[in-house]
Length: 424
Image 1 (spheres, helix red, strand yellow):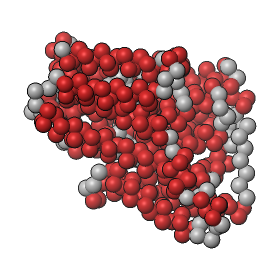
Image 2 (cartoon, rainbow, N blue to C red; image 1 turned 120 degrees about the horizontal axis):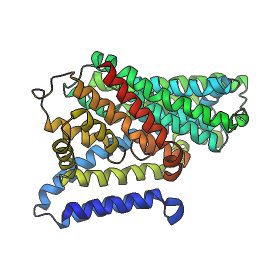
Image 3 (tube, rainbow, N blue to C red; image 1 turned 30 degrees about the vertical axis):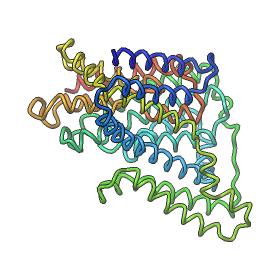
Image 4 (cartoon, rainbow, N blue to C red; image 1 turned 60 degrees about the horizontal axis):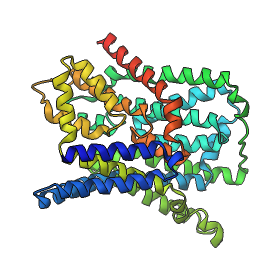
C-alpha cells in the first residue's frame, strides 16, 4: 500500500513540475511539498518510527552534503562574476566563429567535468554562456548541450560523477581501466547531439545574434578580474584533490575553498568604499545565488530518499534483473530509469545486489553501469544534478527540454552504448 501511495505521489508531483508553466505553481514549491509529504506517508505506515528517524537522519546528512557543496560552488561562481572574472573569458570567446564556439563550449565542459565534476562544471560554463549570449532559443540550446556534455564528461572519470566515485571507492572499477574503457563511448555520447544541435541552430539562423553581449573591461580592472578568476578556478579544481588528501567529503573542500576565496576578496577589496565593497562581497554573492534551485534539489532528494527507504528502488532493480535475462539490456534500461530517479541510489542498489564474486573488478558490467547511470540522466532535465541546477539558473522549462533536447540526449546515449558494445 505504501509503495503505491509513494509512486502515485511521485508521478503527480513530477507532472506538476513538468507542467509548471500551465499550473502556475513554482516547481520548488511542489518538490518541497511532495518531498516532505512522502516522508509523512512513510512515517504513517511505519511500525518502527525510531528506526525510520535514524534512516531519515542518515538521508538528511547525505542530502545536506550535496546542498552545501552546491551552495559553496554557486557562491564561488557568483563571487567570480561579481569581480567580472567571467568577462575575461567572454572577451576571449566573443570573436570566435559560431561553429568553433559551440565546439569549444561542448568539449570544454566535457573535459572540465572529468577533472572537476559535472555539477560544478555546469554552473561554471552556464555562467559563461549567460554572459556571452542573449536570452533566447540559442542560449537554451547551448545550455542543453552543456547538460549532456557535463554528464558525458563525468561518466568516464572516477571523480567526474558521484556514481563513478562510488564504483571506484567500492573497488568495482580502477581509474585507468575506467577511463580507457569509457572515454570513447562518452565522447560519442557528446558528439552526436553536439553536431545535431549545431545543424539545428545553423538552419534556424540563430547564430546571427551571437555577438550581441560584448563586454569591455578596463585595463585597470582586468588584472583584478583575472586574479579572482584564476583563484576561483584553482579552488574549484582543487576540491577533488582536497578530498583524496584529507579523506573528507567534497563539500568540506568546497566550503574550505569558499572561506579561502572569501578571505582573499576581503583583503583585495579592503580599500574600496562601503558601497563598492558590498557589491563585491560574499554577502552580495549569497543574495544572487539561485536559492529556489537549491530548495528544488532538496525536495527531489527527499522524495527519492523516501522511495529508497521503503525499498522501492531495490525492488525496481531486482524486478528489472529478474524480467530481463540479458544484462546489457538491464543496464540500458537502468540508464533510462536514471533519467527519472536519481542515479546514486540505483548504483547503490546494484552494488548491494552484486558482489565482486558475481562480477569481477573492472568487468564490463561495472563499466557499462557507470556509463549508463552517468549519462542516462541527460534524457530529462530533472534526471541529473547538472540538469536541475541548469534548470534553476537558466529557467528552462521541463517541457522545452523534453521537446527539443531529450531526443538528442537519447540518440547520444544509445550511440555511446552501442560504441561500448562494439569495442567490447
